[in-house]
Image (cartoon, rainbow, N blue to C red):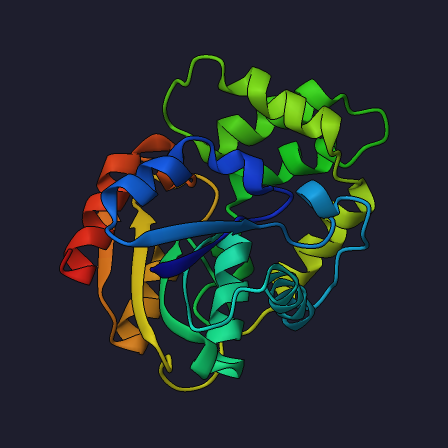
Length: 247
């Protein structure tokens, strides 16, 4: 049995994976998915979010130890979660067998306006203002991260936010951690697959293409999905992982 650790991005939690977890386990032989929340999100929403990615890694390792799940692990991670995966695999390569990174970005392989595209600046500033309603938050995030129509999804995301709200302070701390993160020097120490969307309106796809060139690792590009690739085209993501694993 291969333990796959799923990590989400900025202010997102394990509940945002939706049906993708069960679909993944059905498609990838001998896989067991464990979804972890970063501090400040989901089940850990009352914790203070670290401002350094390395501290997020330590939280993940502590959670898995508490579950009694020993390494090595396979990692599948998006955006900020992918930065956590990269740091984890570099700091503890004996704990990570392989990593699949989705629509991520990190210095020095993208400018600040490529890592967070300017069209989103006003929306994000408005969300950070006091009095912003949960519905405004989730509607805006869905518009920024998905290029498809998903019936009933907004209602589900709103329920998650109301049950486990992410504070503005934690959102800002996570944004700071993402902004300051720099990729380790040299090539990845574990097998790495990059997945990215050419139509990502949040993060410019050039961040992934530059990473792939520098890391000399495979990159698969989706022509139309948004930032949340598993949401917009789960079947495509699974097909890329299957092919890469030789499953």
